[in-house]
Image 1 (cartoon, helix red, strand yellow):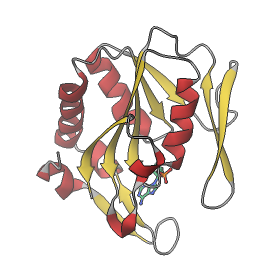
Image 2 (spheres, helix red, strand yellow):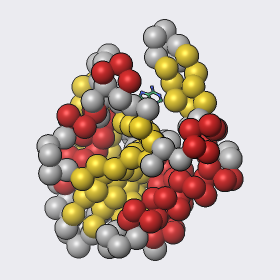
Image 3 (spheres, protein in one colour):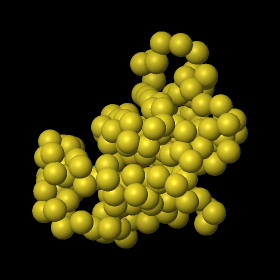
Image 4 (cartoon, helix red, strand yellow):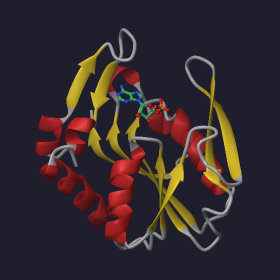
Length: 176
Ligand code: AMP
């Protein structure tokens, strides 16, 4: 937890994409081989005994470590994507963002009731996007769903965990 090498390499971009937001730029963790290794290995240690069969990554920053982790765990990888990107039949969830609505989609045949799912994204802020993805994944009735983020933002009173009930298993590598 809060590995110093990850903390040192995470880039903060003030006022992106709009004034007042401190944007945590995980691209500096993705491009650094040691950081990439640390993230995947720390997550592998957390989840190696959970019987994960599918890692679901949220577009697009959830795809990078999500896919690497799926390979390490011997699991499959599923993309949770923005609207009209997936070519086959999909299930959809629409949710409220700060400005207007957003929709996410997963292929209808991507998850089965036998799966143990690890749902992964880069960062937990308000929890809105993960909550929508979690609801969508639960519609497939998998055996179990774990939620994971690289970064959990707790600064400025953010409490993304409050978007989920106490039974939801949420893990993060870095708390800021
Ligand atoms: P939320 O739905 O509010 O939890 O927002 C999480 C999503 O928005 C993640 O996919 C992040 O990539 C992105 N995000 C929100 N706030 C930030 C931030 N301060 N820095 C970097 N990414 C962010």
